Length: 459
Image 1 (cartoon, one colour):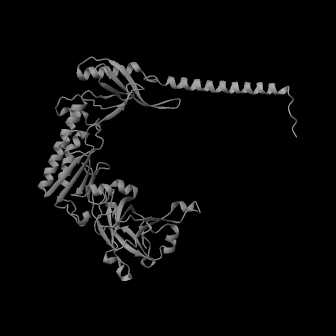
Image 2 (cartoon, helix red, strand yellow):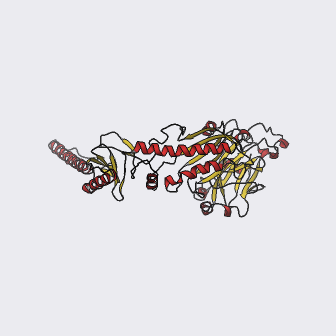
Image 3 (cartoon, one colour):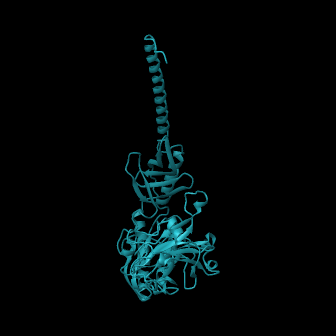
């Protein structure tokens, strides 16, 4: 048992505790002061960079461009504040004496200024407006009725569809000031073609998004479910030509994305994540053709009520490119039930008597015909639709009511995590969403690999 301290030792012990407390407090305050000092050292308007050099660049650029000698009134480094300092973007915003802002990159030099932003943005809008109106006329000449044209959610006939979207930068004049947003351009705009040539390699249009709603030639399909689509629908060339005419604005690099909807289905497609009513999409990424890659939506029947469509720009599935085969012995219904739920909602159940397994694979040599970036990765995105009311499903012969959403179709994949963990199931079972297409078909997205068939199960 521990002996109690003598009464004479208690004051000394308390004094020692107070001394230790003061030392700890002193250490804490010292660290805090050091932290504040470090933070304040990083809170000058320009950190460690050469302020005079940046001012000279901004003033020289401004004088050469506008023929006016205007000084820099203030400058602010673009940075994000963090504990004990800041992270710099390597750029500074120079507020000129006339209120204009010049953006200087510490390594590349002057990026541009925002003095002419309003008239330049309006000029870009004029270019896009003219191109889209020519595209609309071309669609009508090709036999299509154009119900709607939108760019960035606004009719091209209106102004403002490029506001705060071209070469946009955000900055503050000082730490406590509100954020400002502006468009910065390097070349001087005088209303002639030369400006667009000079600015084309520098401008950032922010991937303008164009939407068309059309009907008529190659655009009318039952339930907005395109099948037997021509190799080059009539509406492609007019839109492609319009986008091609915009390429000089971006130094030949496509930046405009286009989605074409069957008339009356745009809002429905937006609600259902773009699966009903989409006729095609023009993607500016991975461009094979000058204007970009087209994704033409064309649902191809593989039998057994299964339809497939490419979901990747530059890839087109046609009849015979993919096949569906019934497989035996790949896995059992009990295995799938054990690995994952075979129902999506409480109202949906699986029917053992309908159990059947399939595999989808592409024909020999199909991948060799695809763009290089698809061949390199060895797969592409694909959509699957399932119509269990199709007579080829054979459900009626099994005595199953085809008007219900059961049985469903499931994707089946080997679970790569199963090798490393006994708690992981050997298979990954993916469910199809019910009634996501306008015609009531079930639907899902997946990937189709060159060297590995896609496995499906009906239950």
